[in-house]
Image (tube, rainbow, N blue to C red; front, side, top):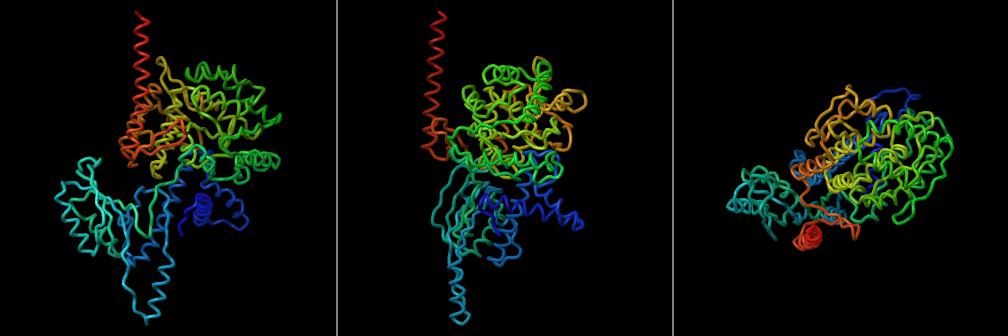
Length: 548
């Protein structure tokens, strides 16, 4: 069974997590019920994080692929078929199968009606891209190979390859019987002159990249949670036994689920215990800002106090904060019901939208929350999103995630964890914090800047694969020379390591993401850049004139 819809995919993820855990944990019937509620989070963990959810999604998608592969094995009657024989193009994306069940049943019925004689298999159209190591002379051997398997090439294109040490990429559209196509793929991969073979589509199966929003309004579809309401599912949650708190969380979460693009963010009438919890954290952090936070954070926090009314006795409303950010960096907020899937959350950043919760952590545990809450996000994330350089890095991280593979999403999530959440930077020779997880946690902020953890220089190749700590304070923190250092290194790393075969660009005028995959789109982008450069040239000329 292939799970194609995003809603079904979430259900499938929860079901699979339970079956995996229940197989490996033999418990009594009395113990089974609470354990089932616990593991429905996707994975047992005291601290929910984008990284853990990304890894869990990868596990689910891999299982989907195995199911899909098994189904293809049965269709092709090839028990030796492996994932290498059926390249899944973007190695992660959502697979949409378009079965021709009617034609299949017709051929079976026809065979039965004719006394068991099978009709001749029908040729299908397949599109593949070959990456050639050598010059075009090897193409003749490849075309002969297609002919040997009774295939007909109906269309062919070539271009210079972007792979290192390879000469050409060749797109072939072939009409061929399915079983012969499977064998052809295996033979092509054994050719010494062929570096890689990617299947773009076949008549029966369409392989697509992971869905992502193309317009800011489509973020209405990016509200998928790995869990619904933490207090309902996790016995270790401080609010698990508090029925009033659970009902309050559900009410606030429903506001986020009902929110639509273009609407004002609903205001929450916060209760006394919630304001008390906010004030406790607020006062603790304010006492540490001058000695522990970076200058960008302190400057933005001061503006928030003056323009939005950040104070210990009042929880800011998301609508007011969103309007403030829009004026400063173009970022906006939208309400979220909880911790989103990694892919949905990162996609929102591409549109300069930060998905922000409105509920407050349980009052019995003001210094710790097992998942993001508005205390963490309003005190930790919002001030840094008011800095232009940091806002630009956040958007570029989001843009890079669009269409990325599951493995790349894991790396982006890990990068986000060690920068946006727990990042450190140098400032006048001193180490300061800029990560939201630090700047909303009194205890971890002190720990991070002590001599207990290890401080490593920020390098994306290392940071993106660093094991993270979700049970306690981090053992390792990454220190950047500056925000521009983070941005330059990240862009270089994306350019060198990301497998996405195209570039995307955000258009702030239409609030949409455009795929730059044609000469016309590139020309339009270049023309817009020329206009921007022209403005800069005029500004320089005016400055020179004023100087003299």
